[in-house]
Length: 363
Image (cartoon, rainbow, N blue to C red; front, side):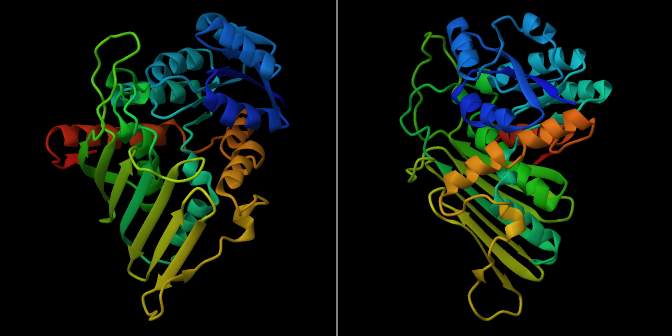
C-alpha cells in the first residue's frame, strides 16, 4: 500500500526535514500541500513536484489523503489536527500538540477515537548519541538512575527581533515549549513517568515588536526545570536560546546521568563531536569513551554532526519513515499523541511554576 500524504506548511522546516524524508520513502506520495500564502504554496508544490496546493484547509483535507503532516505554527495544531482526525487520517503533528494541555487532551482523545497512527516528532531521540545513551541506561550501565542533567544551548534569540516562537499568544510559551519540550521528552524516555516540576525562567533579551504592531506577551528565552519522577529520580533540564554557539547549527547538547552502578556523559557540539563517555562505580580511571556501535549508526556518516542528522531523517528511515510505515501497516508508532500530551502537561506545569516563583507543581 502506498500512503497519500498531505503537507501542512511551506516553511524552511518543511523543506529541510519533511519533504526530503517523504520523497525518499518508497511508499509515500506527497499529493497536496497547504499554506497561507498562495504564491509560496504554488512555488513549494512546484519545487517538490506536488500535484495540488491549497490555501483553504477545508479543500485541502477533502483531497484524497491517507495521512497528514502538520508542521504549521503552534496555534494551528489543535484545529488542523481535529480536522484531519474527523476524516480518519493518520497525523504527524509538530510539538507542542496544542497551546494548552486541554487542547492536547482533546487531540489525544480524538486520535484514540479515530484509531489512527499518530506521531509527535521529538527529533533528538533519533540521533545516534541519544539512542546509545538510551540503550546503555536500559541495559544497566548506570544501575538505578538517580539523577539526570541536560543542557541545550543555542543562540537563535540573541538579536532580539520578533519571533513567533516567543509570542505567547501564538506559541503558548517561549523556550520552555520550543526547546524544553525536547528535553522533557528525552528525560521521560530515559527515566519514566514524571510526577512534579519546578522551574525558574527569564527573558534576557528584550523582544522587538510584532511586524503588524499588535501588542503581545513575550515568552522566556532561558529556563531551568527540575523534574521529579515516580521512581524517585530527578532531572535538571536547562534550555537557553541566547548562547553564542559555533557552527552552522549553532547549538550544543550535553547530558549526564548518574546511578547506583555508574555514570554516563554525552556531548554533541553539532559540529564534529557526538560522543558518549562512561564509568562504573568501581572505576578509578576517568570516564572512557563508549563508542557508538554500528547498529545504531546504521550507515550514517559520523565525522560531521550535520551530515549525521541529514542521513538519520532524510534517508535513514527514522521518525517520518516510522510514521509512514505505521500509516501503511495500520500499526502504532512512538512517540504518539499520548506521549506528546504528557510532555505538554509537564511543560505547562513548568510555565505555571515559573510564573508563581518556582514552586513545585504536580503533573
